[in-house]
Amino acid sequence: MGRQAAAEPGTPVSAAEAFQPFWDAYHTVTDRYAGEPVDRNTLIQGAIRGMIAALGDPYSTYLTSEEYRKSLQGISGQFEGIGAEIATQAGDGTQGCTPLGPDCHLLVTAALADSPAERAGLKSGDLVLETDGTSLDGLTVDGARDRIRGPKGTVVTLTIRRGTAEPFTVSITRDVVQEREVTTKVLAGGTVGYVRLAGFSDAAAIQLTEALAAQVKAGRTRLILDLRGNPGGYVTAARTVASQFIGSGVIFWEQDAQGNQVATEAMPGGVATDPKLRVVALIDGGTASASEIVAGALQDSGRATLVGQQSFGKGTVQQWQELTGEGGAFKLTIARWLTPDKRWINKVGLTPNVMVTLPDPIPAGSDPILDKGLEVLGASAQGDRLRDAA
Image (cartoon, one colour):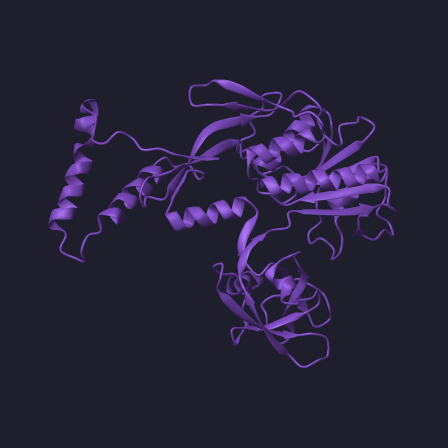
């Protein structure tokens, strides 16, 4: 994922002339700037940030030490907060209202297992009225989430209304929480197993394997893998996920700066590799990076039918390099990835085998892409109700 490296000090003699303008600027700033005192580390970090930005690559970036720490937490499926899933709910019970106010409340939909929220007694259906004594009125759900999240070890006090009882306060000490990245359901009267993957952390790959194993053990021979809105994550997790469906062969290729291509093969022992198991993968414009690696492998191998809309189109691999001292780290594009058939989908995306045109607006409570996926599997969502898988 990342590595730490330090180049040899000084400017190589062969590059001295090219670097002279940089050193001229650096010494002029440190010797003659008449504003606030010059902090050398700030200058160095600014120079690194500018060098990475000059590449013009949206996926290569410099982060401070604190930004780097938070970024690693994000792609590992972790965050610092209380571990409660939230949504907005209007007075008539419908979700998705905005902004928060008298007729739009912040709703706790679930407290994650073994999270600070669960230990503090938060329950599904609780309404959050205030954080630390301040009303949430006027905020979006993201703004409210930012208020509730915070560094590990700090305390947030929530004002809660539960049912018709009087509001009460609860103080919760924040901690590092593992996000729930896998959702599993059964559809079509229990005949179709549905697994939604929201990220590609190592924990998510393990959770998905367990969810698929449970679906197969229950005797379901038709499976839906929902990758919609999945921005990606670790390529190692992508290999693990794809290997649950693909028993052997190439999952993806990596091509480095010199044009060398190396294949990443499927790992043995996948839980859903039996060809009798029919698989549909749902994708859309939010399906990117590692999720496209999986979808591309499923498509090229013929293991699954892709249903939905054109995927995002991110065909590059990044690596973090930690810098010594307080220099933070930078993320650099170090390779292209190609599908097993050596397609490079960057800025193009994957084209589904079955394209779904969405109505505008989409009727409330409907999911045309999921409906089409069920249709491809010979199932129907008519009158079906999502329920937790056994």
